[in-house]
Structures are given as C-alpha cells and as structure tokens.
Image 1 (cartoon, one colour):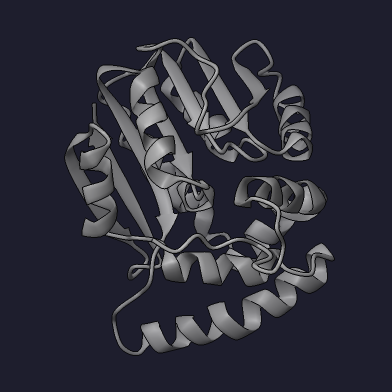
Image 2 (spheres, helix red, strand yellow):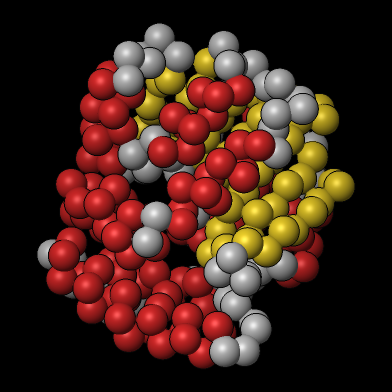
Length: 241
C-alpha cells in the first residue's frame, strides 16, 4: 500500500507531516468541515454512534479525535468516560474549548498521543471510534493492532472513512468536486499549501471496502460490516474484537 504524505517531496515522516498539517489548519478546521461537506458529515457521525447504542459502552476511546466532534456525539450513549486522542495539540486545544463550552470536562478527556503507540493498558475500552483518521495512520496495520490491543473482548470498533463513489453520474460529479474544487477552496480558506490536496490523494490510495476489511481481520477483528453512505462518499465500518 502506497504511503501518501501531505508533502511527498519532504523527508519528514507521514506522522510528522500530518501532525504539522493539522496544527496549521486547526483554527478553521470545523468551519471547513461543515462548508466543504455541506454539513453531511454530521449525519455520518450520528450513524456511527448509533452503531454502539445496543452495547451501551461505558469507556470509549475516540482515536484521531481532532476537535472532538465524534467524542461529543458519543455523549448520547451516556458513557462514564470518553477519551479523545490525537497527534495534533492544536486540534486538541480547539476540542477542549468545545468540551468546556458544553460543560463536559468531567466526561471527555483529550489526550495527545499516537495511534500506533496508544498510552493505555490492554483491554481498557468497551468501544473505539475513528472518524476520518485511519487514512492518516503512517502504518495502518500497526494502528489497527494497537486499537485491538486496548479493546475489551467483544468490544466494538466503529470507523468512518472516505471512499470512492461508483454510481454514474454521481461518481463523475464527485470526482470533479473532490479533485478540482475542494482542494482549491480548502487550501485557500485554510491558508494551507497542501492540506486539501493531500485529502483527495489519500482517499484515492486508501484500501476501502473489502480491502480494508481484510486489514481489520489481519489485525484481530471479526464480524466486520461495511456500509456505504451517501452513494459511497463515505463508508461506515463496524467490527468486533
């Protein structure tokens, strides 16, 4: 699998580049998410959290939490504790501001950390969520194995990740928007030279659907379901340890 970095010409690791990239766009990240997805991402997060309703998890880990949107959505499950983990300190700063504003500081903790070296004991969490983050792992299988390690037996993993639509004519319209419109507006508004050029490139090379399911199986997961959302713009994966 090709490792796609924000700046392919740089000697810095993907991990270092991703951290620096998200630090640089943190201030406008939430606005850009809503603007560039036309708000559809909110519905995707609701669907992801709904997958955990039946299991009533008490301890939830949200990997690549960013500014905490999925962690805040998970409050609907009434857990005892949610831990949001991310490489980018500036994204976490914005997330902590949102958590404080919602008076949820006692429920949600934001931690700086690496998905491939999680600072938690084995069998710690009843559920793990990742929204649009696995694509940014430097080593996909290493990150998935770490997630599996910190999950309790029979715990659920829920992953949201961009995918490539396959239905005509939506596929053609989406590809045009994703390749030519989104990078221009995203980079312009975020004042980043590469963040929204990296986005379509990383989606293009990400192993989606059954290919991603095979990575999950390799890393210790079972009962894997893949649900395409919005004509395949995004895929919701559910797996069990």
